[in-house]
Image (cartoon, rainbow, N blue to C red):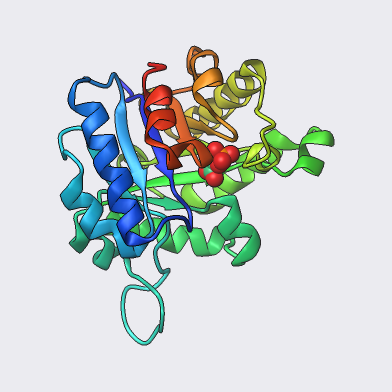
Length: 251
Ligand code: PEP
């Protein structure tokens, strides 16, 4: 059965000290709780080792927000999937719309990153989603299908079984404009059908598909109540421990 997941994406926020403080707050709030979902925090690469040490590993796993599309070598400034693995992180967020838009990440590049993430025993949280003009032209299904096909459909069924999908309509990220529960359910069900057509019903049923885009404690419950919404990828609200736990508590 698929897992419900709430994953934070801190993006390029917090100094190391502030990040450790946030991780400790999260640890103390969660100490008295048993979350009904897997909890992950996606932190800057510079913070991973310390955040891994700070959180209670039984309750919170750590993700990187990116990795290189090369294994190792003369790629100044890049961080490889094996380096991420060596920090104790278990997940890598891949293909976030900010990486696609500002750093030119194509489905072809993301295919390489996905392979390296899996080869290093890490779980990709693979982001897909349409921009506003595509939604207005009713092209969202086409867009997400192409993103999945081009970056992920070379994987075997066993490999695809390790992927977490995060559907994030770009028009909802950081804008306060959240998708309606109906819009989320409709496209999540479509994404699952695309996976089922390629890999069969079992792989599709076992795939966690998260919603991302202005998810907050006040709207998480109605989003997560949908049968094909298996949790959230949370940006802004993951920068505050109480808000983030408010979303975790929606399960
Ligand atoms: C994100 O960046 O993944 C995200 C969903 O951001 P926000 O929650 O701030 O919209």
